[in-house]
Image 1 (tube, rainbow, N blue to C red):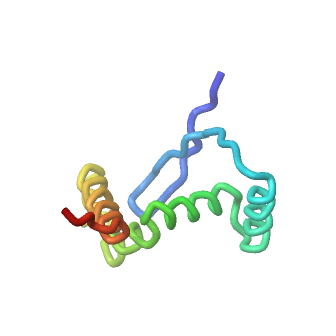
Image 2 (image 1 turned 135 degrees about the vertical axis):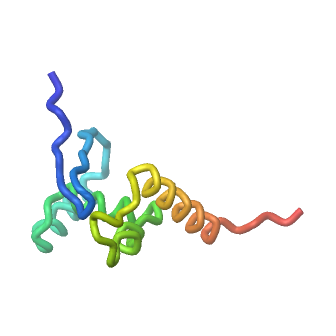
Length: 100
């Protein structure tokens, strides 16, 4: 029987994590564990940070929430729309346009 996702809290309330299994190079996993230990973070935080940077989400949440009170925060749907727009913009910057 699977356990429910572990809740964690962000500036706008509670969010959940989903447990998953991935195959990863042993040396890379070891390096992530070392990075977590050195930074005082949990391993999943190191993986989440790396994925956010790779997917172009690094800094997006911070930019969205900077200076926004919980009362003035966008709805979950609006936040998702903003995140999708931000991701599309980052991808457009990274993807060279094809001639023709």
